[in-house]
Length: 97
Image (cartoon, rainbow, N blue to C red):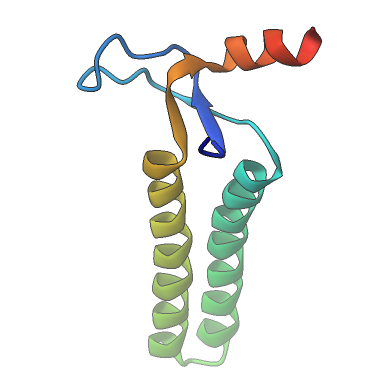
């Protein structure tokens, strides 16, 4: 069985009509979201740090690399680790039983 990290708010009737919105199901999903946010914040802080020293190019490079790494990881996880058949509400019902 595949370990899913995310579930959609509403399941898709077909694979071409995937529901919008993701809900993290476990710590891996929450860590993926946190990594994306921390990548943006860290890149912004490095851009600010280098910008205050009048070295914009290294700051921009750091921001782009960290933001891209976080975004690529999040998009990969949202495609590869999302349950296409069950909604987040189904998982919530299973946990309550």
